[in-house]
Image (cartoon, rainbow, N blue to C red; front, top):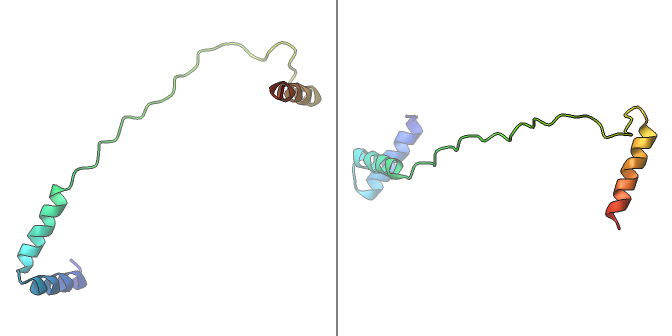
Amino acid sequence: MPEDLVRRARKKALAEGRSLTALIEDGLRRVLDEPRAPARRKRVLPPVSSARGGLMPGIDLDDSAALQELEDLGAAGRFR
């Protein structure tokens, strides 16, 4: 124990009119009587998709203008 901690504990025990050992025992009881933290839950991973396929027909990843237009049309449809 760091000396400062022991000195503070002795001072507190003296102020309360009890022994340092009694103070330490009380502290240990408090720590040991605390409810334990709940056990960590087992990590659940999301299911892995087994879907097959690819791009929808008519989608060309090399044509960025067409992709932008499809995205704009989709966004416009959401505003209706």
